[in-house]
Image (cartoon, rainbow, N blue to C red; front, side, top):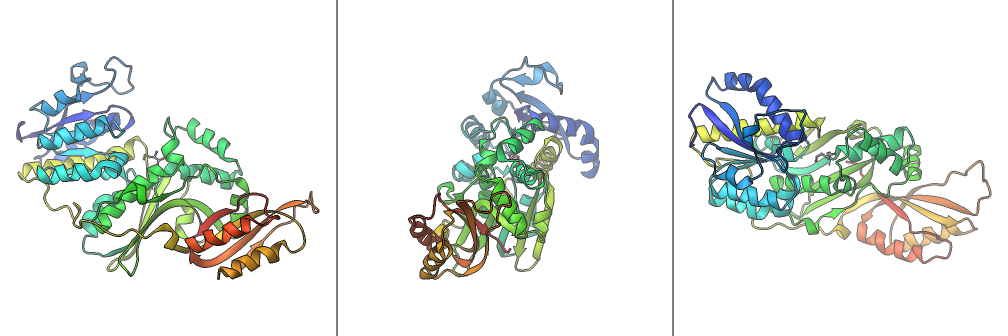
Length: 441
Ligand code: HSE
């Protein structure tokens, strides 16, 4: 450590919501943190990288700390730890890589960076024996990374089920409770400041998928290629399916599943799914997150809390700063992290081989025999039917076009896709069927 023994110097890249939250939290609780380390751990933000130093900000910091030059921060000998909060996968990559090469521990909340380019960065981390801490990258203030890396390190983790995008969770909740359609619920989420300025990754499932990739990598020890992960978002969820879910005793949640199978393969996917109303995850509302972990020793454990926002995310960044500071104090590099990929490769289960029960809605022409036609093609594929649902609209009891819902027994997704291809070709099926998995968890 180059700086004064008493104080860890921080180079903060990014002074938006989370960056200024870290500034505030260190100002508010820095003394408490030092007391908890028996006075041996103090932090000082010594450089702040921003795009526009002249911009008016709610949180003020001395003007001399600001710079637009991230390289100068990595090179500054008074900076011991680099905090990356600029987002994206380009400049953020350069910055994190340069910090690791310079032997400066990194704290980041950047799930896209680690999920997309973590392979290279973790290799640099190992090569330079310099840690990357990333508690803030998954589920905001919930300490799920440390829980998996440390508290549960003795467990074989058979499944992780998460609601880990607060924006989607809020939108789906409003579509359920207030019967809003997707654009209206998204508008509300944006007005409340929940959705990112560019909400794309929130609603197309990728923000959650990046987080699931990190959880899966920690739990199973190999790098997961994002291109092999099945990801669907909430943009196409229709109020009709939310209503039918309710009628049938389910709620729709954007779920991430990471599951180990008996053959050692790992199933990993993110998609809007039906879960029983009575399941504990069904009551995770608003922008809250929850991660359910099943381990062979611990059994079921549930982590619940705020998955986004200034203070919760700063809480995780500051926790990582303290860990980075402790390791620096001890003169150690990466130390034991319970993670750092420990397997060269693993096998992901192809999505067509993954099995659940399903809800399938068929928009059809209401003619005699339509149910029998669909049912016989499902039977031909060996898919059992556990129920049907087709409420008659009292305003149009003789409507020509209706929605027929089939609830299907568990079968491989590929089998279902094959059957649906044939069913779609029936002349009575007017639009593509809508499919949701039913997760029994
Ligand atoms: N925008 C994310 C969410 C938080 O809505 O949960 C940051 O990943």
